[in-house]
Figure 1 (spheres, rainbow, N blue to C red):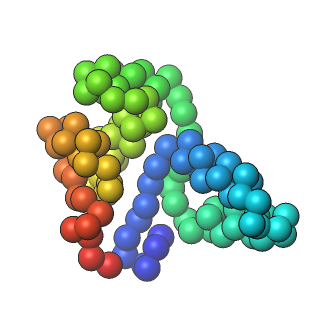
Figure 2: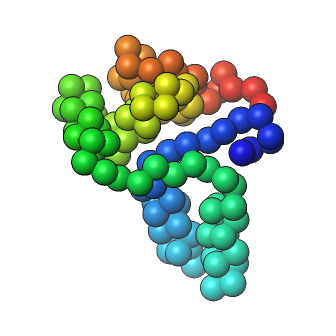
Figure 3: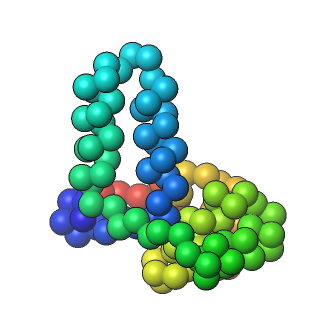
Length: 110
């Protein structure tokens, strides 16, 4: 939970993308990088592991919407959880508006 009333969920791949960026940042010491990775995991984001049905649906969405498998994974999670997709990616927002409810990041108020 973030802020006590907002639950965040994603497939597990964004954790690896963010952690990879942290790992490759030459400005961070090893201790800083380790603490950064730990703090991301402590956010309490519900991470959905890959499975056959999720991967199959993600592939369907990616091909149908002509988007990347990575972007389609966010749509798949929102669809599965019947959740609103929060995105800063305009192309992703346009692609998924008929699949899930979309909230663009500039429209989000905490």
